[in-house]
Length: 99
Image: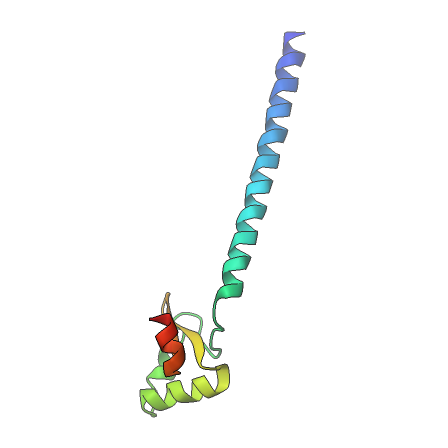
């Protein structure tokens, strides 16, 4: 009798722990999706390891490259420099809002 009581208690606690884990995982995934929605678009054409660094170090000057990217992706976009994300703002009025 004691074995069945112990088994049912363990089973109940295991089910509750599993439900708690699943609920917390779903809440974190919703939170990360909400954060992604608020981020400006990320520029494409990035290599997997060094990201946008080769695009910025090409034969064109840096301001021309960023200007072309602004024409393509809009006045506010992000680029990845290695593991870091950088926000590029090419409109002075929008830059005043971010400051």
